[in-house]
Image (cartoon, rainbow, N blue to C red; front, side, top):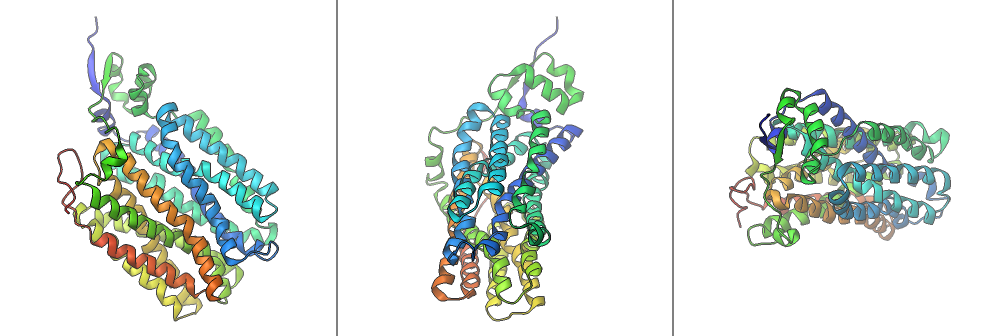
Length: 450
């Protein structure tokens, strides 16, 4: 008679080698977040085509970008409860199908300002699922020693690459096929969704939490084939602490109040700057005398340099968690000042260099802020901490394109884009740079300093 072995699911996943299945699932998440990044940023390339035919003011043109972000906000806020109840896989697939269908409908039926914004809002409900749930899934799957690399390449790289692809489609295809081609290309996510249906398993930690042992044994045998015999008679257990009943209130206890409020204010300001930047830079550069192709290429340039900037900053931050706030502050100070210099100089070479720098520093640092947030809280309410950071930040992202468009309308020129974005980045740098952290927030670690 075979004996029963007690197995901790978290330790098993943390100690696993990287298998072909890990790599396959990592590639799938990369492709999912690629389409999320692509759909998030492609409205910036619509503005130039529709602002005159639809008679849009600058503030209305900014809302073309913000409308999808409003849907994203609701999708991001609501998806967690659905994923906890029905599973990561089902919720991720539902988000993908929402994006698939609404992207196709946008290409075919968005014939006015109201219809475009309405369809983009509904698309955003699906987009709000993909990025945060893709992050959750890959962190519940990846071996601990490579979890940061998996997150960087599986989430950040895909999202940044999606922004680059949106820029390339905007430059090379929209002149011949109109802005609708952006959304017809976006429907290429449909074959991906079919592949996800066929290949993507449920998260092993979710299976363990629901007692779905046969599925869990089969999946763990694929993730750790050398332990297959152990899993045949294993009883899986978890050592995770129970989450507090009110996880949002836990973020505002005396131990965490300052770090929470600092992160929320910072995220609001940085996403205000980032979405104002990606939403308006292509059109503003054309107003400054750049060619159509050159103006649109700036969006792709920013996304490409943002990944390099995030990777560089992450490498520095890995050397010492306590130094991360100051490193983030330095990145945003440099990026904000760089954007501000566009107020005084206008030449093609200078514009190109500054936009590359803005992507590297302003957008690149945001990826590291997300990881910093996750490491600032205990396991029991870490997801709520990251969710609140992204939720509050997304409000800034919604307001950025609209407010900056309104400022242009009031001031009568594009200069408002540069001082608003540069100013927001510099203020964010001062806010996060003032935070003193003593160590990562694990159950036995030291709290953030007051």
